[in-house]
Every structure is written in C-alpha cells, then in structure tokens.
Length: 399
Ligand SMILES: Cc1cc2nc3c(=O)[nH]c(=O)nc-3n(C[C@H](O)[C@H](O)[C@H](O)COP(=O)(O)OP(=O)(O)OC[C@H]3O[C@@H](n4cnc5c(N)ncnc54)[C@H](O)[C@@H]3O)c2cc1C
Image (tube, rainbow, N blue to C red; front, top):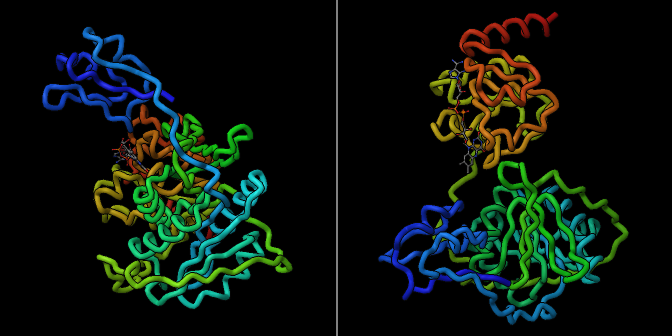
C-alpha cells in the first residue's frame, strides 16, 4: 500500500504543488503544504512539481487487521411502522450471495418495538440468524439510539460485512455507525461481490455523475460497510419453510439517550403520484422563477397522471420539497416519459433521470445540455408552452 507525506523541513510553501494538484487536495497551512488524504489519489503530479523534494510517496506497512476475527454477513432490517421494508429483502438477496461465497451465515438485525412478527419474514427471505432488539424507544427511527445499539452489536458480534439500504434512514445511520467504529463505508453501491483472491468485498458504485463505475475495497478495516441503492438488487424470494435462529438482545437504557426527540410524523401534502413509481414525470427547474409557477408543472402532471420532479436548484430555492429532487443527490427515476421544464441538464441532474425511456425537454436556450439527452426538444418559453400542453392533453385525454 502507498501513502503520501510532506517532509516539513524541505517544504518552502512555494505553492507549486497546490497550483498543479488536479484534485485540489493540497493547501498551504501555517507555511507548510498540507495534503487532504481524502481527496488525494496519489497521482504523483505534485512530486514532479516540487523543486525541493519535499513530497514523498512511500510504501506503508500493511495493517495489523486480523480479518479472521470477523465473520458473517449482516443486513440492517429497515422497518417502518413495524413492517420490514422491501429494500431489506433486496439486501438479503445480495447478502445471501456474499454469505455463500464466504461460507458464512447471513444475519439480519431488526430494531423496533413489538416487531417480533417480522422475524419469520426475515428468515423466510434468507436470514440464518435474526438479532432482535425491541424497546419502545426504538419504535421509530432516530439516529442516535439506533446507531448506538447497532455499534454495540457490531462490536460484540464482529460481522465482516454490514449492509444498509441507501434510503433516508440508511444514509443517515450508516455513516454515523461507520465513523464511530472506524469502519470503511461505500455509499450507494449498485454492485457487490466477494474478491475470490482476498475474500474482501468489492463495492461498485457510479461516480462522476454516472460516467465511471468505481470499485472500492476496504482492506484494513472491518466490518466492510456499504449502503445499497433500493430497486437495484433483486429481492430474495420468500420461503416460509426455512428455519433460522432468533437471538433476542436486551438494550441498555444508556444506549437510548438521544439529543433529538421525535415529536410527530407528518405526511407530505402532495397529491400527485409517488416519483419512484411514476410512469410519467413532469419536472421543473430554476427556469420556473418562483414557487408559485410550479403550479404549471403540477397542472400538467395532474392531467397526465404524472409525478412531479424537480432540479436541485428548485429544491434549494425552497420552491418544492426535497423528496421531489431528481439527480445525484436526489432520486434516481426511470419513467417511460420524463418532461424536463426549465432544467438546464447538468450532469448531476442527468445522473438521476437519463435512463428514462423517453426524455422531452422544454428550454428557451437551444444550447442547453438537456437537449443532448432529449428525444424531443421544445425550444421556447415554458410559460407559453406548458399551459398549451396542459390544455391540449386535457382535451385529448377527455376524448
Ligand atoms: C455534488 C452535487 C450534487 C448535485 N446534485 C444534484 C441533483 O441531485 N439534482 C439536480 O438537479 N442538481 C444537482 N446538482 C446541481 C446541478 O449542478 C445544477 O446546479 C442544477 O441541476 C441546476 O438546476 P436547473 O437546471 O434547474 O437550473 P439552471 O442550471 O439554472 O437552469 C435553468 C434552465 O432554465 C432555462 N429557462 C429559464 N427560463 C426559461 C423559460 N422561461 N422557459 C424555458 N426555459 C427557461 C434556462 O435556459 C436554463 O437552461 C448538484 C450539484 C453538485 C455539485
């Protein structure tokens, strides 16, 4: 393994490494070059630029990790209102392949209150063992107690792999757990495999807006943690004849302390179709100019029986809730028809919708990048086009 370091005695803080670094990983702090190892790719460009030989890439000792102390594949069984969510079955489907390849057990960990009925479901879907932690304080997801209970279990039982769904809950929980137990975490994986040579987990995920698939390994830390995008892996098929083991864990009250309190649950007041299930999506961007103008998107969506999507610019402006955001940091959607209105088509937006069957773009700028992925493009003012489309579709669909 390689690492990079600065020989402080030789560094003159001339800044040439900072200027040339393509990853913006180097900054001058207190007169010495400082390398952000999270950004550095060890490309070595800075070595050539440094006139004083102050930068060094060298071999580091392999870690003292005893990976044989870590066994089994664990899956976080996400539940809502006492019902295990389908992403868990997808994780169990994938986890089964990994457990078979490693010849270890597949385990599910289920946290909640009065949820014992779900244990058999998890076993039917492939869990060999279910760790059940029940307490009124765990009835609803809260970051801190859930993370603390999980950390306690992971440290005691030492699984080699721990998978969570890349859902709102998984994305909140997994990094908190990984940071505290000093584990690696790959977010938003679309492929998982066991390396036949090392037995390590090969974690594949799209990067650079989906243009590159990166495979990430975690050789020096355990467990190897990954969140997995919902609807990417196949669900494990249920077999209610399967037998499995139930391990009931008592929870220490100290683990349930939380700095936040759940007051109530409020469902969103949107009336249109759920984005992930929508066959048609009408999405609006900054081109709409004001929150009120989103009504134009909603009207067309209503006539078409479509879901309402949005660009991050529209969400960040507070015009529409985050749950409507499509893209790299929002939802990935794959409808039959995606109508992008006043959306420029930046790579981060395309990452969430470019696999739609048909893309229709409305934009007044004929050079907008959205037209490069669009099957049909309408160059013009959305304030004129949208009401016309709504009126015509209303007429057509009535008749
Ligand atoms: C790490 C990271 C993650 C990100 N994640 C996401 C993400 O998940 N989703 C996302 O969408 N973005 C994301 N972004 C932001 C992204 O880079 C863009 O800034 C964003 O998508 C722009 O939104 P927009 O197209 O609505 O706005 P703009 O780029 O400002 O485009 C507005 C468009 O509207 C058109 N327009 C204006 N007026 C009219 C009119 N009257 N009629 C017709 N057209 C009109 C303009 O020609 C323009 O093309 C991310 C960025 C980063 C750095």
